[in-house]
Length: 304
Ligand code: NAD
Image (tube, rainbow, N blue to C red; front, side):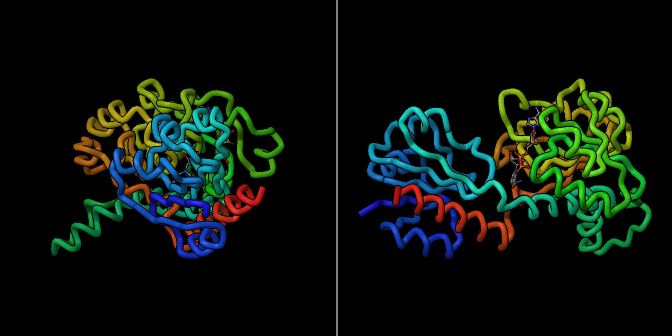
């Protein structure tokens, strides 16, 4: 019987599909040692972003044929190590685009209007109407870094708010940007200089690590708001902390962090930082879609 090991929470509909092709064991919150032990005789491993499928995990797996990532980014999986062993990696790139784009808009509005801070104050019994004065999205320039699936959904929604949109993505055709009504810029520094709001939607790779570094942050407007619903490692958090602390930029709204869960991250001590614990794809709809799409792909691979 095929052994399917699921090490992160997976939608029940996906489990049902997997049960049609093998014995499913759901074991979440494993330590590294437990994972190494359990993966030994697994034919299939299914994860979300929590489990780190590193080279040693892959090497320990004697029977592994396929790794399913119920979501988009595969940066928690050593795809190179998997490929070397002939293990197929499948994911669900489309499943969460709308959910992440909606959270991006939510964080953008929340940061612009200080909604989390105002809510906390209200609940403390205060009624402070001056302290939380915000800014509008309307008429502002939004800089979108990465115009793929999620970036494009953000563009559509930001247009409805009356924002002007500039984009940085060297890999998309000019015509795509034109049809979206986005002005493409060739240089990320130009985007950082011109944008009132900046949102990141690129994958984390050695090339994109710290794509927003000290140099880029120094170019931003005093009122700039940065939103990151992609990956924490895209921003130099130390440089971001210093800029926010000294009020060189207005605010940051972060769903992702260089280290997750964050340990004593100084960003979280600042009033002008709001955030969520990697919730981009955490909706009923996205989880169901990610799980079932990946389960169907695994089924196909197993059936050859
Ligand atoms: P995508 O592959 O559709 O789009 C990524 C875009 O980035 C592409 O258009 C690509 O050309 C562009 N790009 C690549 N390298 C670049 C560079 N150096 N500079 C500028 N642009 C570059 O991916 P997507 O589905 O839109 O997802 C984007 C990222 O969002 C994922 O890689 C993932 O890390 C993140 N994500 C986060 C969550 C969450 O829970 N917060 C959920 C899903 C995805």
